[in-house]
Image (cartoon, rainbow, N blue to C red):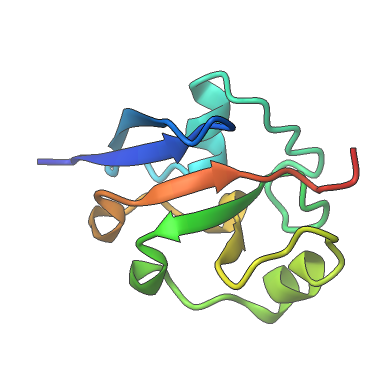
Length: 109
């Protein structure tokens, strides 16, 4: 099966489960935008703007290692957490099944 479930933690801490395809090469950012979440993605997924910042509430240990470029961008944010990632840098994969993310944005607005 190529679909996984990703849960979005809403501002009221409720969870919205979404079915995500892993066979289309989508990033988490593209998937969230496609589901009409408010993600600016100003730079188009190049890890240059941090407007797709998410906090990985559950499943962080299953993600690919963070790149130096991604870390450098995250490090500029006022609301960075220990499990912050740029959703444009996370390709949907079976390992992400059950992951919970909270959309953070750039924390500047």
